[in-house]
Figure 1 (cartoon, one colour):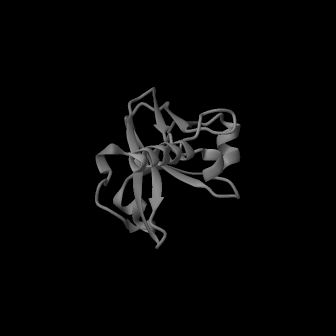
Figure 2: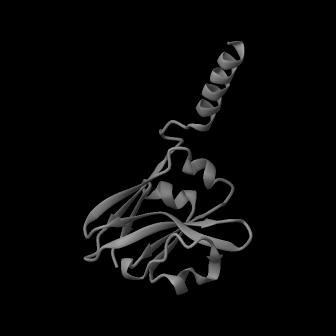
Length: 136
């Protein structure tokens, strides 16, 4: 019984320590506004740390539609501190490779039709209120 109680309390503490509340110093969301006349896919570049990448957290955005990249376990303020950047891509859905695992980072624009590439700093996101507008 004591072991179960200990495990329950430990689990609660673990989850509480990894969740961050949304607020002025912690943004979970980036809003994408597609102001173009075409459906697009927006995606975040993920890396395995060994020079290989993939596009993650991707979603469709129809013309004149908003879509939200919501990462509740992350604060962009912490992720992009110390000069780090987030690379985001706008991709043509007719040539989008997903679910193939990691590949050479330089081949992202070869395997996908990249319409726009953003290399965003925390200052970029703050300046635009965590909103990215795509308007080919």
